[in-house]
Length: 202
Image 1 (cartoon, rainbow, N blue to C red):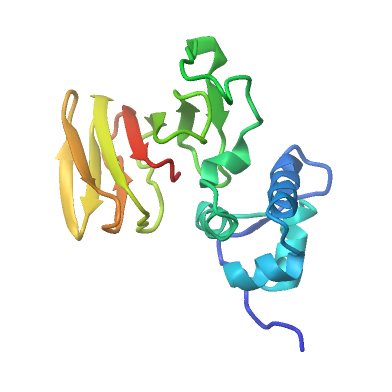
Image 2: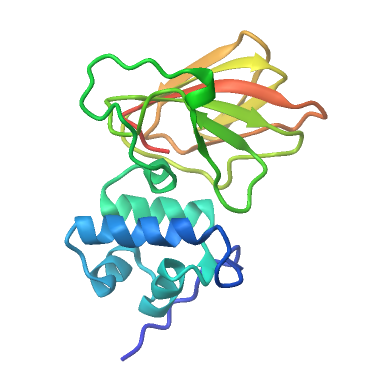
């Protein structure tokens, strides 16, 4: 019997051959690395087989929430699906030059992310975040570990456990990431921040 699960409402259909195809390829690659079949991953992430198949074939572009569910089922940070393997995999000391930062371009968002750590396979990750006016992270999200945020410019509001915290330049927050959280830039000015996660979870 075919699954009747519906895809998330914010899924976008894209033409075959668009550059976003790399995302579907990455999902398929990590699925195979995990030794999982399409059916197994679809069941674990609670998606229909046909929906997951269309994502892997780049016929659909998943939302950030969908990427997080797939990454969780694969046992990897969601950001890892957006990155190519770098050259610092086994190095205990790694310098990341500004011009060499890996960019994370998640679908359906205007927020710009750059990875300040060499990859997502360390005990912690640092993200450079550029948030345009009115941008937000998406629905409430929780994960293992702890998060810390330092606002560099502009203002960012962060909700942790149903409480909103207003942060301006130089302000910081540190919290248990197991508590549902999200952020937004509700101002009319762009904002920049550095986001720490341990272990990497984005």
